[in-house]
Amino acid sequence: SSLLGGVFLMAAPKHRQSLERRHKRQRHPDKLIKPKENLFPCPECGSMMQEGFLCINCYQRIKYETDIIRQKIKETETDGLASTSETVVRYADETITESDKSKRVIEMARKKPHWFTKDMYDEHWKTS
Image (cartoon, rainbow, N blue to C red):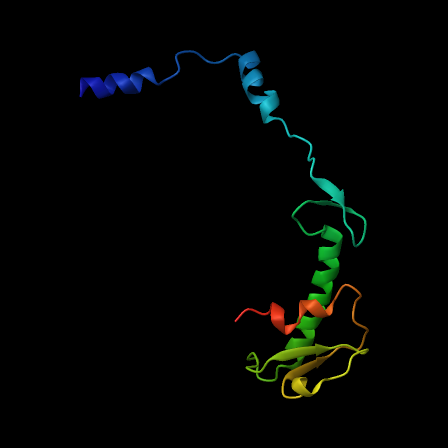
Protein backbone atom coordinates (compact mmCIF):
# COMPACT_ATOMS: atom_id res chain seq x y z
CA SER A 1 0.00 0.00 0.00
CA SER A 2 2.94 2.37 0.62
CA LEU A 3 4.04 1.83 -3.00
CA LEU A 4 0.68 3.04 -4.39
CA GLY A 5 0.62 6.07 -2.08
CA GLY A 6 4.02 7.15 -3.38
CA VAL A 7 2.92 6.85 -7.03
CA PHE A 8 -0.07 9.13 -6.49
CA LEU A 9 2.08 11.71 -4.75
CA MET A 10 4.62 11.76 -7.59
CA ALA A 11 2.00 12.71 -10.19
CA ALA A 12 0.88 15.91 -8.44
CA PRO A 13 2.41 19.21 -9.60
CA LYS A 14 4.67 20.84 -7.03
CA HIS A 15 4.61 24.41 -8.38
CA ARG A 16 2.23 26.47 -10.46
CA GLN A 17 3.28 26.88 -14.09
CA SER A 18 4.22 30.40 -15.06
CA LEU A 19 2.07 32.41 -17.46
CA GLU A 20 4.79 32.28 -20.10
CA ARG A 21 4.92 28.46 -20.00
CA ARG A 22 1.13 28.16 -20.13
CA HIS A 23 0.92 30.47 -23.15
CA LYS A 24 3.77 28.63 -24.84
CA ARG A 25 1.95 25.32 -24.34
CA GLN A 26 -1.51 26.59 -25.32
CA ARG A 27 -0.45 28.69 -28.33
CA HIS A 28 2.04 26.32 -29.91
CA PRO A 29 2.04 26.59 -33.74
CA ASP A 30 0.87 22.96 -34.04
CA LYS A 31 -2.33 23.86 -32.16
CA LEU A 32 -3.22 26.92 -34.24
CA ILE A 33 -6.03 26.72 -36.80
CA LYS A 34 -4.55 25.86 -40.17
CA PRO A 35 -6.08 27.30 -43.36
CA LYS A 36 -7.94 24.77 -45.50
CA GLU A 37 -6.20 23.87 -48.73
CA ASN A 38 -8.92 21.67 -50.21
CA LEU A 39 -11.35 24.46 -51.20
CA PHE A 40 -12.49 24.92 -54.77
CA PRO A 41 -15.42 26.60 -56.57
CA CYS A 42 -18.68 24.66 -56.86
CA PRO A 43 -19.27 23.58 -60.48
CA GLU A 44 -23.00 24.37 -60.14
CA CYS A 45 -23.15 27.80 -58.46
CA GLY A 46 -19.51 28.97 -58.21
CA SER A 47 -19.31 29.51 -54.44
CA MET A 48 -16.40 28.02 -52.52
CA MET A 49 -16.85 24.49 -51.18
CA GLN A 50 -14.72 21.91 -49.42
CA GLU A 51 -13.65 18.83 -51.35
CA GLY A 52 -15.83 15.82 -50.54
CA PHE A 53 -18.69 17.96 -49.18
CA LEU A 54 -21.85 19.39 -50.69
CA CYS A 55 -21.83 23.12 -51.46
CA ILE A 56 -23.80 25.00 -48.79
CA ASN A 57 -25.69 27.12 -51.35
CA CYS A 58 -26.70 24.08 -53.39
CA TYR A 59 -27.67 22.29 -50.19
CA GLN A 60 -29.97 25.18 -49.21
CA ARG A 61 -31.74 25.01 -52.60
CA ILE A 62 -32.17 21.22 -52.37
CA LYS A 63 -33.41 21.47 -48.77
CA TYR A 64 -35.96 24.14 -49.75
CA GLU A 65 -37.32 21.97 -52.59
CA THR A 66 -37.43 18.90 -50.33
CA ASP A 67 -39.32 20.83 -47.65
CA ILE A 68 -41.94 21.89 -50.20
CA ILE A 69 -42.37 18.27 -51.37
CA ARG A 70 -42.70 17.05 -47.77
CA GLN A 71 -45.29 19.74 -47.05
CA LYS A 72 -47.34 18.64 -50.10
CA ILE A 73 -47.13 15.01 -48.96
CA LYS A 74 -48.41 15.97 -45.50
CA GLU A 75 -51.34 17.82 -47.07
CA THR A 76 -52.38 14.72 -49.04
CA GLU A 77 -52.27 12.40 -46.03
CA THR A 78 -55.84 12.07 -44.81
CA ASP A 79 -55.63 10.01 -41.64
CA GLY A 80 -52.19 11.14 -40.46
CA LEU A 81 -50.59 7.83 -41.40
CA ALA A 82 -47.97 7.44 -44.10
CA SER A 83 -49.13 5.88 -47.35
CA THR A 84 -48.06 2.32 -48.11
CA SER A 85 -47.96 2.93 -51.87
CA GLU A 86 -44.98 4.42 -53.67
CA THR A 87 -44.99 8.20 -54.08
CA VAL A 88 -44.17 10.01 -57.33
CA VAL A 89 -43.63 13.78 -57.57
CA ARG A 90 -44.98 15.30 -60.80
CA TYR A 91 -43.97 18.82 -61.77
CA ALA A 92 -45.92 21.09 -64.14
CA ASP A 93 -43.66 20.32 -67.12
CA GLU A 94 -43.96 16.52 -66.77
CA THR A 95 -46.52 13.92 -67.76
CA ILE A 96 -47.59 10.84 -65.81
CA THR A 97 -46.38 7.54 -67.27
CA GLU A 98 -48.41 4.32 -67.29
CA SER A 99 -46.29 2.84 -64.50
CA ASP A 100 -46.93 5.90 -62.29
CA LYS A 101 -50.74 5.70 -62.47
CA SER A 102 -50.91 3.02 -59.76
CA LYS A 103 -48.72 5.09 -57.42
CA ARG A 104 -49.57 8.08 -55.25
CA VAL A 105 -48.86 11.22 -57.31
CA ILE A 106 -47.89 14.53 -55.69
CA GLU A 107 -48.67 17.45 -58.01
CA MET A 108 -46.26 20.40 -58.01
CA ALA A 109 -47.55 23.59 -59.65
CA ARG A 110 -44.09 24.74 -60.77
CA LYS A 111 -41.42 23.56 -63.19
CA LYS A 112 -38.82 21.02 -62.15
CA PRO A 113 -35.52 22.63 -61.02
CA HIS A 114 -32.65 22.30 -63.50
CA TRP A 115 -30.48 20.42 -60.98
CA PHE A 116 -33.17 17.73 -60.47
CA THR A 117 -32.01 15.21 -63.08
CA LYS A 118 -33.61 11.93 -64.12
CA ASP A 119 -30.69 10.02 -62.57
CA MET A 120 -31.83 11.13 -59.12
CA TYR A 121 -34.96 9.00 -59.25
CA ASP A 122 -34.09 6.41 -61.88
CA GLU A 123 -34.74 2.74 -61.09
CA HIS A 124 -31.11 1.60 -61.37
CA TRP A 125 -30.08 3.91 -58.50
CA LYS A 126 -32.54 2.40 -56.02
CA THR A 127 -31.24 -0.17 -53.56
CA SER A 128 -33.29 -3.25 -52.80
